[in-house]
Length: 146
Image (cartoon, rainbow, N blue to C red; front, side, top):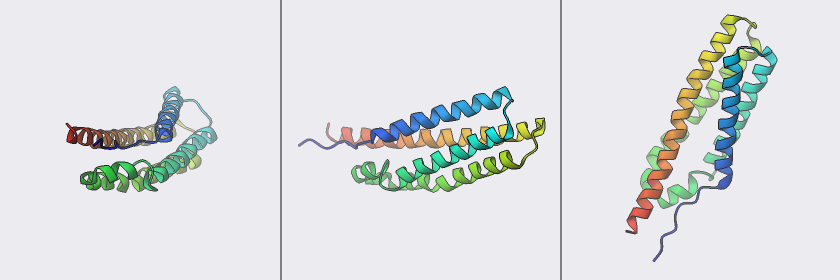
């Protein structure tokens, strides 16, 4: 009997690639330290909207649904990751607000760079934890058939 492996939708991989590209573009603009305030606000608000859509896909039976059907022992870890989503959206809301309302100054650049760096570190860890969860589901599933 062949056991069905969990399926990770291609569009989720595309979303991850797109988000990494967008995060890299924002990081490059921040490191250059030169962009109009409105441009930065637009970048952060666009990022927030795209990450919100990505989280919706993960939460609404997309990314985790099939994997958890095949690996129910991972529910607690998956729920912990899903519960982090509002925190990331709040961080991006703060970034949007600071970018929209701040004065275009060195202090403003430093503040948004610090906020973005904090977001990036935590979000990168979150994405790494999701990948580990999916690998654990695959390895446990494949290992069960050995």
